Image (cartoon, rainbow, N blue to C red; front, side, top):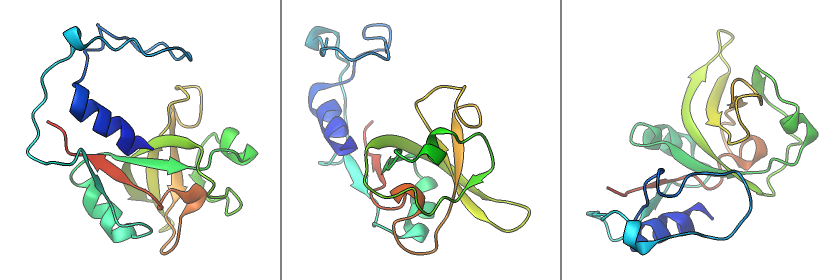
Length: 154
């Protein structure tokens, strides 16, 4: 889960991108404590868990930070997404992928959506982003409303 990453970050300290560049490949951790930056936080916890399946809480949390969410990204329709508001009710909620909700909006037709940033690159979706229809209650499309969290790190 993402909170494990936040906890590790808080405990060990972050490394600069130039010291530990992203490679998009599986491998072993190359963490170097000598290159870690000091980190201060006013909170004993590294993250805040947003109330599950509560869109009002998600809207409020998005005024503070980008949300980390866990979703189900197994559906073929998800993989083939190009544009528009994704509303595949069969997407599922068996979480297997972490992404970020960076905002929300409403279409001219009045359909509310989450703006999700994916890690699959600019060739996927709308330059790496997706709009997922907001569900008024429940887990949301692909389970996006189930486990939103955000960091409280300095």
